[in-house]
Image (tube, rainbow, N blue to C red; front, side, top):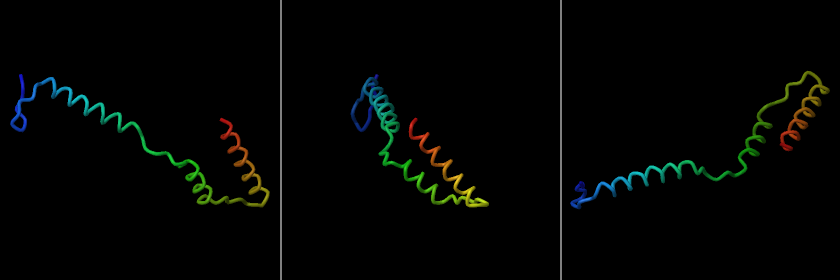
Length: 78
């Protein structure tokens, strides 16, 4: 059996192959992803700037900064 598309007879096999190619080709293009331009580093820097450290004393602020620095070092090792 065949279908008439734009005045031409197209066989079912070609229509099925075209549909499958379009579906799987589109899915593979969608899953590829885009460029990754060190977005994690930029978002980390933005988070550091936007979140203030509300400490009651200078010792507490120093403790928080040291804790964050140690946690970042531990993250970079993994």
